[in-house]
Length: 247
Ligand code: UGY
Ligand code: MN
Image 1 (cartoon, rainbow, N blue to C red):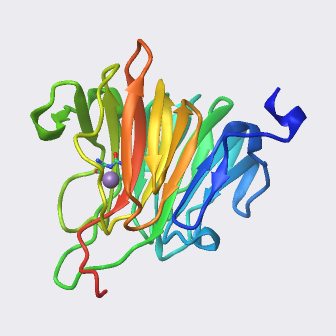
Image 2 (image 1 turned 180 degrees about the vertical axis):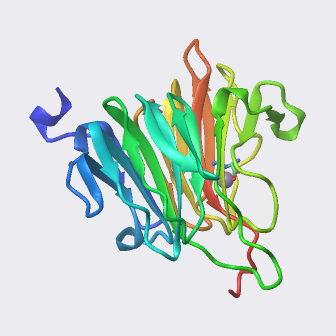
C-alpha cells in the first residue's frame, strides 16, 4: 500500500492538481442528506467552478444548487430521480442531468448512488435566453471525431450554443490514441477519469493516471494525454465556454 510509506500519486501544484482516490476525504455538505461528498476542486484551489463526487445512501436527497448556480450531474453508479420539465425522470449509470441557475429542482437517490457533480455560477449573455433543464444518456450521444481521428471520440453532453457558459464532454481514446497536440488554452478543466488510463502531461510534469482519478487544470495549463492499456480510456471533461475573456 502506497500510503504506508507516505506516498501517493496525488499532486497539487499552482496550475494543476491530480487527486487520486487514496487521498479522497469525505465530508457532509449543506443541502445533501444521507450523502458523503468528496470536494475535488473549487475557488480555494483557484478554480472558477466546483466539482465534487457525491456518495448517496438510498433515500438520500440533494436540495437545489444555489440560486445563481447551474448544476450538472453524471450518475457513476446507482439510480436517481430528478424532475425535468415537470416530469420525474429516473437516471441510471452514465445518465446525466443539467439544471440551470435558478432551478428549484433537487435530486433523490433511488438506490445507493455515486454522482459526479459540477457547479458553476451562471454568466448570462445579454440578449440570449438562458438554457433550460435537460437530461441524457452518455453512451447514446453521437460522437464526433477530434481532428477527424477515429480513435478519439468526443461526446458533447450539452448543446453547443452560446446560451451555455460551460461544456461537459466525454473523450474516449482507443488504446494508444493521444491528443494530437499539447493544448494551452484560456478555458480551465475539471476531469474525472471514468475508464482506462494512460499518461497525462500537466504543466511540466507527466503523470500515470487511471479510472477514479480527478484532475484540475487551470487556464493555460499545458496539457496532453496518451492512452495506455488494452481497453479504451474515457474521461468526463468540464470547461468554461462561450464568454468573452474580459467578462
Ligand atoms: O476540449 C478540450 O479542451 C480537450 N481536448 N482537452 C483535454 O482533453 N485536455
Ligand atoms: Mn483542453
